[in-house]
Image (cartoon, rainbow, N blue to C red; front, side, top):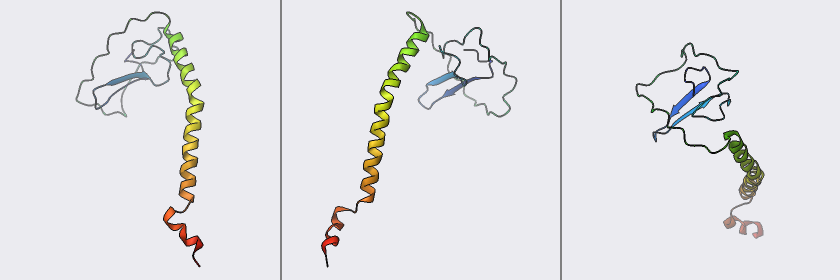
Length: 117
């Protein structure tokens, strides 16, 4: 990745893992490389709004061997996510509906009050 690009970001987490990415999501082969003819490449002039830490972030890992087109691989992964998405949304909605109904219903120990005169 072009670390001198204005749109490049990296974050190091407590586990030691480092994420490197384009904030515009224009680098399909992140974290290893940006497109050589990226139309949004801009040289980073200053980091005025950021605080730099004293620790040095780890170097970018070696690029793994890729058999085939990375774009096709990412498209197929996106298709899998898109297929799973509606069922996940349905499960979350059903769980929220169950929680809503449980919140509206009185506790079981208070049911006897309905029949008391």
